[in-house]
Image 1 (cartoon, rainbow, N blue to C red):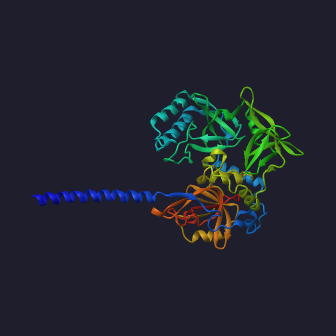
Image 2 (image 1 turned 120 degrees about the vertical axis):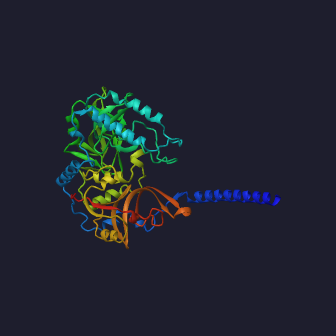
Image 3 (image 1 turned 90 degrees about the vertical axis):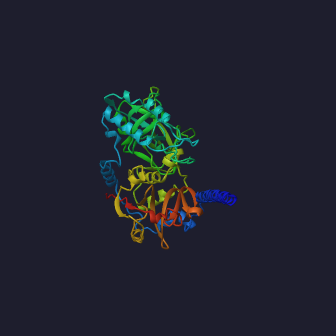
Length: 464
C-alpha cells in the first residue's frame, strides 16, 4: 500500500514538474520570438553614400531630359483616371443636391465596417460600444433630410482627414502608437471639398475630397456662397507649385510674418511676381466664416516653380531626392508622409494626380508586369524598366524605381522598418524615413525581401 501511494505521489510530482517546465520553455520561446527593435544601419545594406544623390541615378538614365508627357497629355491622363471609379474623384462636379438616404447609408456603412474590427486606445484598452454610441449620437443620421444640400468649400490649412469624427488615436494592436488607424489622410491647404454633413456639436464636417470621403475639422474649411470662386481658384491658369519638401508662406511683402507652410505638390494661384517674392492668392475665412481670399507672399528663395514642372526622368528623380531622409508619418499625420503620400507629392509637381492609397496607385499608368510569386522574372523586367517614372507595388507598400547597380536593383521609398532573422532571432530594424535601398532589403527576414514581395510594376507614361 505504501509503495502504491509513494508511486502515485511521485507520478503527480513528475507531471507537475513537466507541466511547469513546459510553461517555462513556452514563455522563453514566445519571448524570444517577439521581435526586438533596433535602429537600421546607415547607409542601408548594399547602399553606397554616393547613391544618396540624384545625379548618380540620373547618369544611369537614358534620355533623362526627354518629356514623358506634355501638359495636354497629362490633362487627358488625369481625366481618364477620374472616369475610372474608385481611383480619383472630381469634387467640383458633385451635384448640388444629394439623396439623404444615400448619404446616411454611406456614413452608416463606414461606421459598421469599422465596428467589426478590434481597436485599442493609447492606454491599450479595447474600444467598446460606448465609444461608437457617442459617435452615432454626435452624427445623428436621423436628422439628415431626404434631400441634402451640398456645399462647396476650400481647406484653409493642411488638416487631417479622419475615418470617424474624433482626434483620439486608435490602434489596431496594443502599443502601436505610431499608426493611428483612424487617420485616413492629410489634406493640403486650398483643396476643394464637397461638404455633405456636420456633427451635432458642429466641430466636424463630413466631406468628399478628390481622394476619399471622411471627417475633417470644421474650423479648417471655409464654405463659399459661390461655387465659381472655388472653380476659378482651382483652375487658375497662372500658378506656382511648391517643389521643395515644405515651403514657407508669409502675410507681408517683407516676408517677416509667418502665415503658413505648404508641402510639395501644393499649388497656389499666382497674382504677380516681384523682386524678392511671389504674390499668391491664399484662402481665408471672413468675419462670417465664409470663404474669402487674401494676398500672401512666398520668398523667391523658396523651392517653388511657376506652373508645373516638365515631366522628365531627371526632374522626377530630383523631386524624389528632395524628400530623402524626410520623416515617416502614417496617413500624413504630424505633417509628414507615408509611402503612398511620398509618391503622390512627387507626381503632383508635374500636375499628375495620383490616388492616395498604394493599392489604388498600383492601378495608375501602364502595367509592365504582375507577379504571383517571386523568381527570376522580376529581375528580367527590372533590367528594362524606365527609371524615375516607374512605381513598384507590394501589398501595403509602394516605391519609386531608381535603377540597377552591380546586379542590384534600387528604389527610393518612404518606409517604416524591415525585419531580419526568424522566430527566436527576429530583429525589427527601424527606418522611419525616406531612404534609398536595394530590393534585397529584408531578404533574411520572415516576410522576405522587397523583391520577393513585389507584385505589380507600372510606368507613369500616359498609358493606362
